Image 1 (tube, helix red, strand yellow):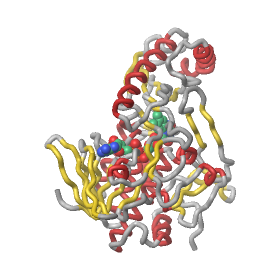
Image 2 (tube, rainbow, N blue to C red):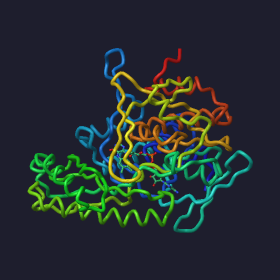
Image 3 (spheres, rainbow, N blue to C red):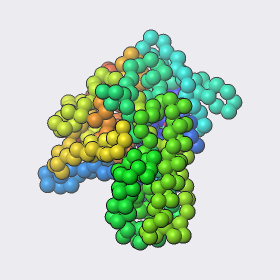
Length: 419
Ligand SMILES: Cc1cc2nc3c(=O)[nH]c(=O)nc-3n(C[C@H](O)[C@H](O)[C@H](O)COP(=O)(O)OP(=O)(O)OC[C@H]3O[C@@H](n4cnc5c(N)ncnc54)[C@H](O)[C@@H]3O)c2cc1C
């Protein structure tokens, strides 16, 4: 394979934005993805809808996820593929393919990274498993957008798993959809159905510990989306435990479906239309980078000098041990920023990390992990690596002010004035 300026591992929102941004700076970029399409958990795990992050700034409602996320959202709108905050993931796959191909970013699907070759602090190449065996891919720079900090882990960069006290992660969820639903009737029955669910949960009727049924309308007629299974106390980086989690979650899908069908709530002629191709992992490994963004930083609405993105989505923690979800909401005029240093893993000088596995604690991750915000983090990582390519320098040696200016010039919102 040819040598690239930049290899991005992982084609989720963070990876796609990183690749597009690096290519925009003139770099030759390859995305390596284990699946068959772009979109990450939005497509592989059916995660939907987009959670939103916006603040009133000088009296005006401002989206904190601007830049490339706005472009992608606009393209979804143009194809009638969004309704409110819900979107059609098939359209998303198509749009992301088009954007990446138009930007001359190369793609390698069905390729699973399992090894990294390093020379001191520099990653030289990665090894991926493919149908034809092992393929070595060399590049000057790398971006780890695997969600699991997989490249950083393989490169021996320090990582942590889950919350600080016991390393438990937020629960995993297998999302599913029901078809042929009387949607109006279902939505009208939602409150009553949840009351009955809670009573049954208290009596121990379910293996699913989740406190309520969480369902969303979709842009597709007669289809309801469920984000309601919950598998706790499993390590998302252990293949055995993830396998167990998939099996438990599938049981939960049918236990909740059977329960709902016993109630008069519009499911009379429904069927389980689809479960996601893979269980959704909210949290797993995160790097310990040059700065660890904390829940306290978020709550204090800290604005870092090296800000590259901003967010004020709730600190939304699904109980890693069982029932309950704790939510800390920001006031509508407040937000925190994400520092560039939280994208820099230790022990290497030619890689950045983007997405839900940047350097932070459990509480901070529970806020910035939403799709719009990881997209902004990816855009920043790609832009920074693009500047490193131009200057042939390490990720710690780029001009952060130039990074911030470039992001702003490309309509990103970084949360601070940089005059
Ligand atoms: C159940 C659930 C519900 C959620 N609900 C919402 C919600 O309602 N709204 C919202 O905005 N956010 C929600 N989130 C959060 C959000 O979806 C994720 O945090 C975000 O999409 C992560 O994006 P990412 O690009 O960092 O990682 P991912 O989307 O996980 O992308 C990582 C990519 O890397 C690839 N990859 C991983 N390992 C390898 C490997 N070894 N080799 C090659 N490729 C690899 C994966 O296939 C994947 O495509 C939810 C998450 C979950 C799991």
